[in-house]
Amino acid sequence: MCRRTRLKLIAATILVCALPAISPPAMAQTKPKVALVMKSLANEFFLNMETGAKDNQKANASKYDLIVNGIKDETDTSNQIKIVEQMIIAKVNGMVIAPADSKALVPVIKKAIDAGIIVVNIDNKLDDGALKEKGIVVPFVGPDNRMGAKLVGDYLGKQIKRGDKVGIIEGVSSTFNAQQRTAGFQDAMKAVGANVVSVQSGQWELDPGNKVAAAMLNAHPDIKALLAGNDNMALGAVAAVRAAGKTGKVLVVGYDNINAIKPMLKDGRVLGTVDQFGSQQAVFGIETVLKAIADKKSQSSLSGVVETKVQLVTKDTK
Image (cartoon, rainbow, N blue to C red; front, side, top):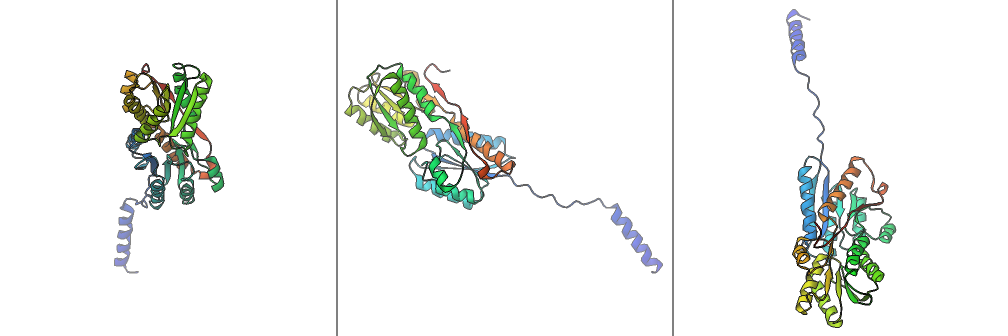
């Protein structure tokens, strides 16, 4: 090797050694993408839930991304199924769902699980039999609806007498939470000896709730109280009581503690309601999903119920 070539090699070696070490590019860490699929965004309860979830995501923007969806009304089950299918196509990592129907959503939820999505159930519990039939487990994060309804039912029970006639305005009858709230109301009315003369569905909505309440008042002019499975239907019941000229003579209770019910609690048009802290329910579900993803848990390893709190709310509640 000639002297000139040897000098060039030495110079090149010195130059390479002088350069800073270059590490291979770090693998980009992608944040989990979580979908929140709710029921009717016309219901203030779910608007509060949406706000709570979005506020949580903003406070934890580095930890996860959030996609929020809802349906037009409480019975729009087919559109909620389509939303879940869209989330599968969008390849979300996790899904928190408040199902419009306890059974009808189970098949598409199985599709989501089969696609590798971690699914957590909130608000309205999926039917255990339907889950078992599909061979899947979905943890439920939410309140004891029967206990919550009994709380407000017991409070009403102190204001009426044995034998008094009462009516129950139920949510969508095929949903678990509607069934449980009706059962809680019935538990309370049985304890006080009241006579439940009618149980009819108000579909969770104000207008259907109003029509059901009006029909009950017409069929049973001496009815003493109306127990509504949510505050939307309680609003409808209040309007029906007013239209019948029975304000102050027929007691009304609800469930959810939405803002629209608060003036009515204050002036006595509504006797009581139940706060199930809807703004936090989705957050609890999201946290459950994120923990499962972080711990690399499979859906089949998730089980059980994470019970959230309920509280009786009356005009005296601070």
